Image (cartoon, rainbow, N blue to C red):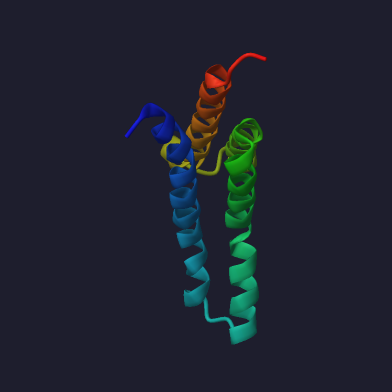
Length: 119
């Protein structure tokens, strides 16, 4: 596999895996004892971060530079909103992948820009 293909697929695959990972945290609504409709509503609300990740991924899939900004912004938003509530490892596990994906999208964009012929 060439470097070009790795740089193209790495942020996209990691973005999908990151969305799946974050969606696991929404499953805690099933043990609370809500009614059926309350459970559905709680699940939809708990999946809001996943929706944001998927939107950033869809945009980044086409426009790597914008995707890199969005993923770094999502990581920073998590750090700002959750600051002081958890141990530093939690920030690393949640915000770290977002920053990594943002960096990979940016590297992919730089690599593609460098490879384009000058007009």
